[in-house]
Length: 240
Length: 240
DNA sequence: GAGTGGTCTAGACCACGAA
DNA sequence: TCGTGGTCTAGACCACTCG
Image (tube, rainbow over all chains, first blue to last red; front, side, top):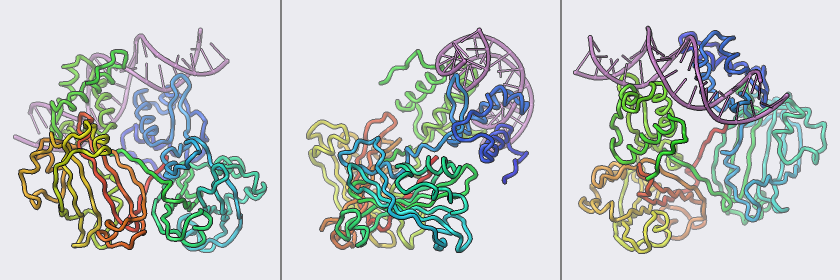
């Protein structure tokens, strides 16, 4: 647990305190935090100072304001995810690809998995292998790793009942909420196994998207490797 | 020229007004804009309102504050450029690759170039072909397009005197400052010509980075296509 | 020391959403 | 109608930069 640094400005200290309470699950995603005037009274600061603190939390993406309603703990949007830049011809942009889980195992964490999930060597992990499909066509292959201690409850449902989106499932079954993530994109010439899966000739380029997803306390919860044909990928960015 | 909408809050109107003055080159990149108290006096608003307006300009990346010194028109940093995610083994991160310009021509704009630069069909454009090198090894090939009306003065220097960075050259010789840019990343299997240039076997993956750079008035100034071996590319992003 | 941006306060009124 | 966040003001004092 990080402590609060007294030398920081009041609004920063207030920000850190609220952020810590969110991390400690005092308020879960979607919940309202106390109103600005309440916070001002509780912490004995001016309204403007509270607003400044919340401004920072908004900029950090931890919280969302809604005029007339309140301020709410935010879920990450994944609008910026690299996976959103895969264009599946025919399917419109908003479509969530179907999910078909091929495998669900428990095993001792391989070294790279243990490292990424901050687990001890040989700790038990869950491994999912799944395909994503649009209009019945395979558009992506994924390998997903989860620490078993937190995610064991996902074995209580059948493979076909996990839904097309995993994060709501994590929240519902395991009480684990994703708060942020980091993604890394690389490109490789596809190997024989993945080539067949994705309908490519060996050697054609695929994009590999690696994602490490964290909870509100910043601990890694999920590590994921996704592969898709590079021809479907077109990434756009603004520079200022 | 955009007009200012009276229905907007004061701080937004003030922001738009200052942004318009920057676009009109009242203050150039690196220059200080008037101090907060001056702006408050000029526009007859409270200091807090000026600060709010400048907060937005800072968030937009148009301007930079510096405590005790003033507020300055910002140059874009290109720290986020996709080109910064090419890893040239051996060369350390901060190194600017050397530039070797192979060609510098004037021609009628091909359709895609005209479209991207918002030029009339057949308007004259300058085309540069250049290589980027690290430690004498070719790491990237580039094709660069500029509207001749604005950039004709670059013909006043020799090919070897244009330096490793083009944007300072544009500013110095042509008075054209880059204020923002958009980049698009795609992947392709390399064709015969580019393969030889980049030292790849035909069919190996390359990343193609397309950049459209704009001035402070948002008009397109440069369109650029860069190609590099995909193996040197590793892109990282945070999601909240 | 003079001038800049940074923090903080106290209070007013507006715009919106929900009951 | 009430409570929420959004805008705006006026003023105080602090922290930093530079001559």
